[in-house]
Length: 76
Image (cartoon, rainbow, N blue to C red):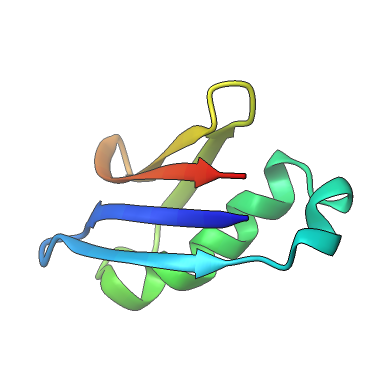
């Protein structure tokens, strides 16, 4: 599985997080959000960061406070 980070933070960082396929069945939306949060924090100033993941749509949003500071797309 690949998680694409899209336009994260002020620098509009774009990157990919590769997750081994053997972990796919074990990961829920909260697990994926935690993985994304660890990477996204490297590109954000804010400490109040949350990640919301929708596995049905294979996408998500990264928020700092009430503002969207990036998107994610999940490629299985």
